[in-house]
Length: 335
Image 1 (cartoon, rainbow, N blue to C red):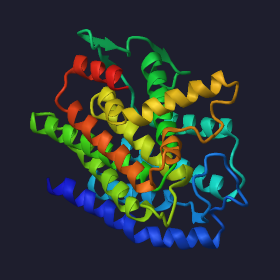
Image 2: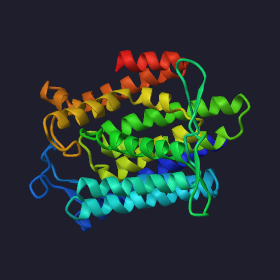
Image 3: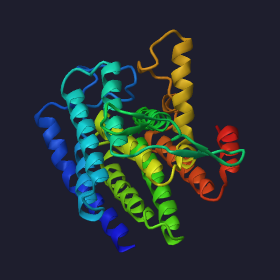
Image 4: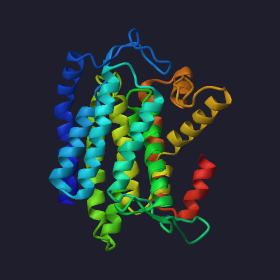
């Protein structure tokens, strides 16, 4: 409990202390969200706001991970992937936005780094009973080692999808760090429970989860309406990447993570296929996300963020008390 608490406090304080510095850095190097100079169809306000939120989030997670989760091969690979996402995000903030396909390719590269460290989805629980093993087909990768084809491809798809789902959920102030805070707490509590039940590997997952929760909470203080800083592409993809990775490392708790983030997930799928039916690029932004529709109905930024956070918390509490069949039923009905 002490390690978990110290990891949480460390990430929280590092994020809080470095966010003002990131705001100054963003202003100095013109990493700004200026609708007049950088118009985007998904903008929800006309204020000029610094974008480099990935810097304090990265520092909070990376430093606290090394201090309280240890220097292991997997942790180093995770930090390497986060460094790539931070670099891409800052370049995206500084330059004209990358083309969506380029950003997607770099996200896939970050996911491959994680999978290359051994993070893979070897099995998923069959809601109809039993276990579905995904690691039954392996290939020798040019003599460098064995890869589990289906398991690794599924893991890459899961990580990339989770990054984009969280990235699409940052439309109003406080929205994105609110939902990631809840998701990390739920994964952390489940991992700590499994640790108490006799699985020693779950302790590191619990520590990492609460480290990410601390970084989310620290950033939320500055991102709450009116936001003093935006997460940008780097901040949202870093937190989305960590949710995906921790849900895998904690024992394929994919259904749990999906249930906690059900509202953003449904919005993602609806938006993705709606754009295709409208003969538009599914990666091209617009103002028809759920948070945009709620703004049109007259809700404020804090109200929308609280709707997302409370719904994630409610579904998260349900997920801790449901078996696989219950989770699948809830996913379908609530979705």
